[in-house]
Length: 214
Image 1 (cartoon, one colour):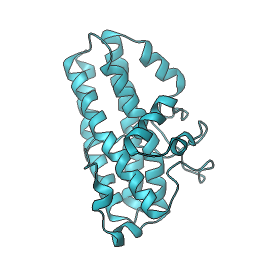
Image 2 (cartoon, rainbow, N blue to C red; image 1 turned 120 degrees about the vertical axis):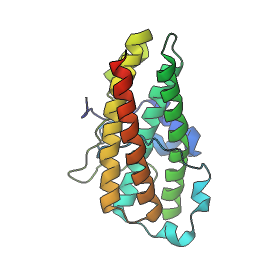
Image 3 (cartoon, rainbow, N blue to C red; image 1 turned 30 degrees about the vertical axis):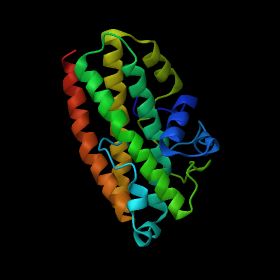
């Protein structure tokens, strides 16, 4: 499950657009065939107005790794929001799982907005490029069939599926965040990548514990 083909539904893209305040064509440009390095669906909530809080000097100091990190993380986060929305709309889901989904959704929205603001300030496209550099693949993303299964599942079965899928999603995110920590130049982006690793690794353990108890 960790190496799923990238499939971002219209709902996920709409969520990213709404959260980031982007034009409708921005995220919709993410092709279903694009792939990128383990993207993180970050777990640490970031201030929604953070883009304006970044100094122009720091904002301008970025490299290709920073750009790729933000471009890939936006749709990755959007899918995490969509998955969380799915589980939050279901009945008979354990309270702990509902609380986790709420926390994930609350973290990802502001981070989408933050990263979109960075790309705009850097003069870079907010949509992922059609052709990614060789060696870059986004792991942890759910395929279309995975999303359909989660949407159809109910009760304890849905809770187990959500946790299993989100663990893989987080593991991919941690992988991508660690790449940014190593290769990135922008101080704010590198800080976010480190925050993501810390938060996501803690949530992975939390989800494994929840899964064991279901």
